[in-house]
Image (tube, rainbow, N blue to C red; front, side, top):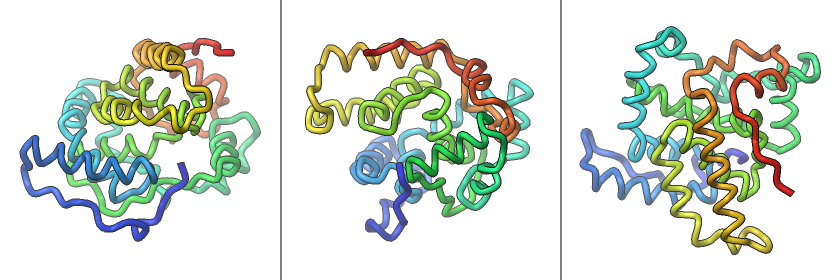
Length: 235
């Protein structure tokens, strides 16, 4: 979704040092209300991930330390925020490459890269930042749209792939209002699509430690084959 400026909303809640589970859940629910309207708001996104997902990000950091790809990511900490992404340069790459198609995708969807308001203080916060920055990358390689159904499918995929609590929370929080946003909403069809997306995520390679920056010139079709399991075809 298109980025909102940090001044569009009041400041998000501030988490104290070593917050309790109740405090983190309360902050997560408060920020989720804004993220449902502006899902790429950087200030609220950071607090949401810190409140709900930081424990899982600590687990991912520990997992990354066990393999070369993850260790390199934690050592180099590359950024894909708005300050580092040169969409104009990527748009000059050959058509069909990941970089070209990514730039075209952002242009056609009128999207903006995530802004980073403050640098991460540790590996877990860096992974949380990385997950926010690569949200639209996963849209591109999975083919899930950025409409309501596509966003829910992406959350189900991410739940299967990374076991993120945020994905489960978003799915549970949104399911009651989906009929207001999806024409001819069918609960059974929705459930089947979410289950298919979840299984697809579980069958795909873990995407969190992937070095997207190394593959701007890789054909997008090849990248999709390498990263994600085939999708079910829906009429």
